[in-house]
Length: 140
Ligand code: CMP
Image (cartoon, rainbow, N blue to C red; front, side):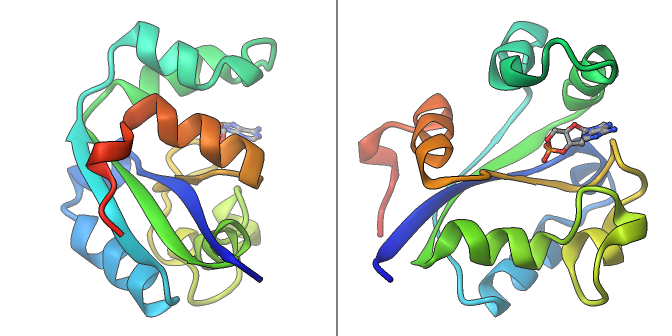
């Protein structure tokens, strides 16, 4: 398996509780390297654009409101099989279903305030990385 990159977001529920370092320790402990990182406060338009794929879902409006409720930390993670590895260490979307030791099991507050986002495929990772970062920002 080749070296891969994926987009991670530490969400407002986690930044609010000062968990950026704790989440990063989990990511690095899983063998992922943080090769770009930026703390930003998304605008409503930016959050709507990032989650455009979910715009018909019943939770879309609440999700956007939550994602602009505080700062987020966008990150590029690099490693072998990084997309799948990140999804493994994040745990299930709903923390009630997340495996022990995962980020969401340990830190998430609810299915919405679930502490982290991670790209679901290599194709979406490329799109999501480009949403937050230019090539010059990524230092492997
Ligand atoms: P994320 O991986 O960022 O992708 C979409 C987000 O929508 C998801 O994590 C959750 O934070 C949020 N969400 C809220 N309700 C739901 C739901 N019922 N199913 C899936 N995602 C949800």
